[in-house]
Length: 273
Length: 317
Image (cartoon, rainbow over all chains, first blue to last red; front, side, top):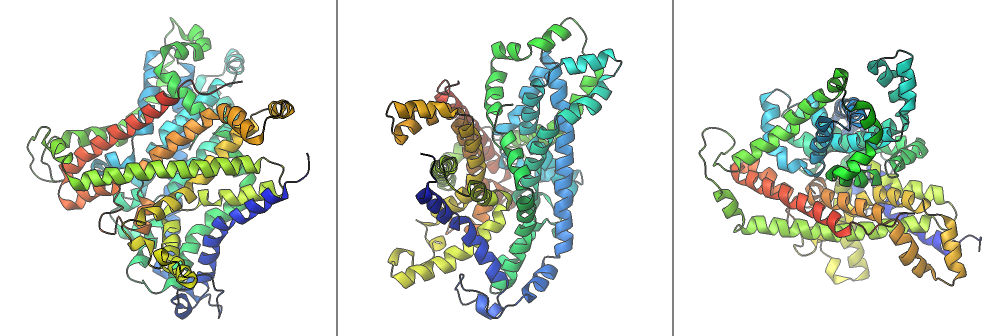
């Protein structure tokens, strides 16, 4: 009864091919010459081995710039999400008996079922009008669409933290301000990780919002600049795939090194604390 | 992305009875006392920013949906004429048909595979952690980039393989076939969203005590019977939340379509989101805002319908 189920293990092993094959194709295509990449055989190994595609992809996508802008957008989104939603959730959770705070929660939750396409056109106009049609504006919007879900996670988590802890600190003369920064925020640690991971992945990988909101194409994020390979450089598949690889690799590498942490962070969001 | 706390909180928010229960402790403390002003400082800025960036644009959009605004210049009121036109516009109806059908198929495919993987990964297998690590990789990569990679596979590799083995239907790229192109979008969307669902199901499965299975095995229950009578009822809440958030995400599908078909061939895979964005360049701004408003109602109704249909089905230990 406690023996290993080998048939099932083998089936799951084969199922990982659905993940590995697209990654393998990306990797091998990136190291081919443009001649070999055009022969239509995606699964062959690179022969000869040609790392020059990366240099070309690097300059075509202006990799350091688009990478930096993606990072800046994601940083704004994550910091804003963490700050705004933890403060809001704390105020709501501790004043639930007051109508204003209860209704605020419902108000914020409304956006949970508000898809971005619904508000996209007015948002494009408003951001253009207010000079936020740039990475800063996209970061703010990413945070806004992360808000409902994050406030929800924080509020649920805060309800599980015993209030006695705060009350004894209050007796010792701590103000609400101090209590939030010194007691609540550290206690929110695991939830900060969860909220932060979700906010980061949603922002870093997004194509829709930056492509619609940002007016200056030289300030585009890493996923958006990949579209240059769809038109101008149609036949240079090796360069395109080198670029796709450079776009995908950072999160995959970080994930593989921190996978235990990422998975527990995401799972934290799934179980009621 | 997903959680059960969310399901419980959303339903709690709609019912004052449970709202009172969850706030019982602070209620005693705060009743009859003024709220410390600092709490407003914590909350109000967020409400204001949220209103400015999300609610105001939504209201502006709804307002313009009643006009003939083209995105700039003068406008006049049309009443509900944009809405009336929507319901007789084949292009709009087709985009809703495609989007709803796509969301339904994808949520069934993705949830079935995710649940099957989650169950398999909790069995007595070797390398469970490594396998799970691999299955979760698609969650961290960008949808548009993945779609570009699959675009190449669908338009070059798949036809090459089909030709080699002599399988006629796939010898031409499915991306160029109006009847099959949607399948490519289902495959890539499922590929990308299975990991998140998988992690939620794994969390659900590990919360089921093992002795339930052992006791039922002693009573002669088959694995399939155990799955139906123990596993499914006990993770119903997880299935619900995965399904609701899954459907909501699929209804807004955009990135993956841009990377695979661009909405084509023709308009065969044009989602509602793509049609709406067309309003910014196509000159029918107000018309597409009416479309967006209808889309909001449809999305909300589908979410509410899912919650109502499954309410009370979840079993709690």
